[in-house]
Length: 120
Image (tube, rainbow, N blue to C red; front, top):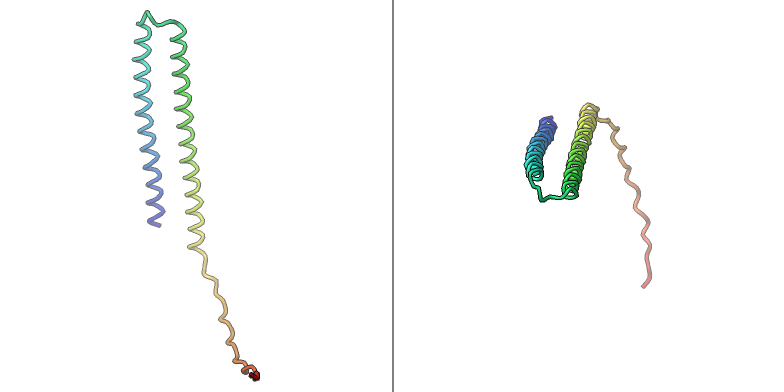
């Protein structure tokens, strides 16, 4: 039972660590985006096509970032579901009484086979 609790705590710890790290990366990316947008707005030399390209680029990396987060969250959910099933089957295994079988009947010795002489 201790191993099951330990494994469950490790999974929860890993998920919390990922969530916190991901949130920090999102905050950093959002700050960089704001800085970049401010720089582009002040850049009179940047053509409108370049600004649209940057906007598309930002949408793409946000979409990829969200897709990555969704995939990792789904993986953690699958791992948690697997672990619940594992704990359930382990609990069933522990509660089952061992099946008692009857001892095998003793084998009666048989008469030795008749010896056959072979002429050389």
